[in-house]
Image 1 (tube, rainbow, N blue to C red):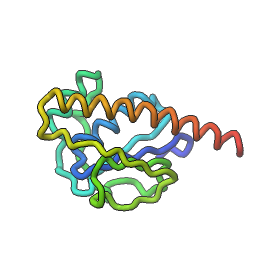
Image 2 (cartoon, rainbow, N blue to C red):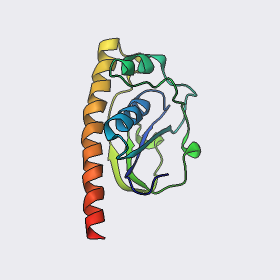
Image 3 (cartoon, rainbow, N blue to C red):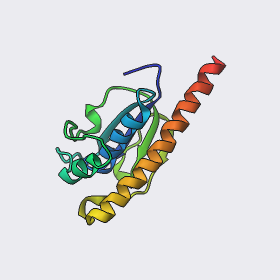
Image 4 (cartoon, rainbow, N blue to C red):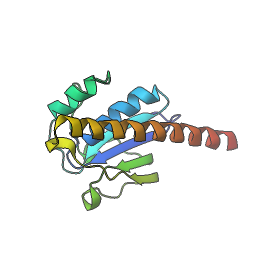
Length: 143
């Protein structure tokens, strides 16, 4: 795991929709300025094909992503852990900052609703990446 960039972990229940999209956006929008990961508290074992399809509309390919559990992650103290509306199903993880985005699971939504959740995730991830990078720069200035 890179030491010089902020680490972001996105957690939802199945790691098949919301957290996968957030990871994809963070990797793309962060462009090497952050290290992004995702996992699920009860992973489904696959990324939702609709998430893959609708992320392609944004130029992000999730086809190579895997649905994984928390035990599949590297040992780390995360700079940011973002839970995505999974409530008590998301266990406590060691993190500098914890955020909960109470987002609906788009799995059963029509395409328009799925896109709305995707777009909300993009907006939230964009702000988080900028916040994490700025916080990291301030921390480095103090050391």
